[in-house]
Length: 326
Image (cartoon, rainbow, N blue to C red; front, side, top):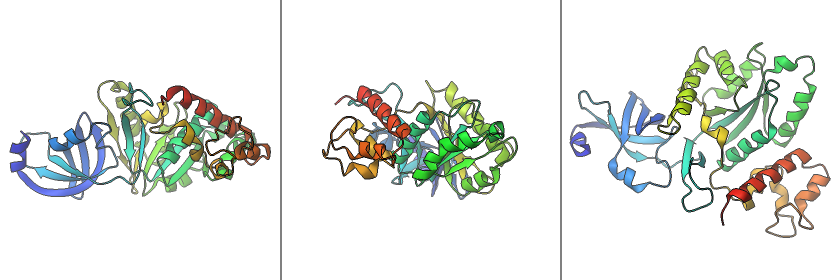
């Protein structure tokens, strides 16, 4: 069948993968979107990871077959600059059967959304998200705190909680979808970029996106719901275009994240305030849990690393130790 289709190739185009579902890929090109499938040879070459994901740049051969849903064949995938991945569901972490599931390729930034209240912010979950983003070498990583209207009478505790992240280098946006506080700044942060926009349930992501652009949040929510309903059978991911340029991807998969290819011994590299101290530890394989002359624990004692972030590191390392099989 593929051989017959290729006889009807009309031209080659390059574009951005903006949607994936059940082996079909929508590629945005200069001539509009084209629904594609993978060339058979490519399918055979890649088995340990997802060859194509939203955010990939690809070359397609456009087909001219009347009445066929497939309008093109993906013949080449450009090398990725970066990729946000997790261990695929039902894949054994730390074993030869571990398989990578690509959440998004080539994101320009990640914005992790939490709420000031209802629900209360879960900073250990945030730390896990930040580790995944640092592992993926995403150029810009931001934190967005919604529902600031709920703490308007006393915002200090919320701002104190996230001041820790601002001090170590993560920009924090304090916003309210209800009152409009900070929405302009959030809009400006999204425009012109391919952004991961995600966080726990109930923090108001849909309301925020609707405040930025009418119906944007509703379109993203439809993608999220479809992904959740089909998570055991089909995988539905999509980049939603912004009216002023750029794309936003709400990625439900990251909410249940086992970071791909993160070994316990390299976790310290992804806590950005811990990493600079590691070279000064007495032992090169220091775990920063009990060893003497540990520069990381000394930095904690001096207040250069907060107790909360250090505890978060310890808990995540313990989890990775339990999961990882050497």
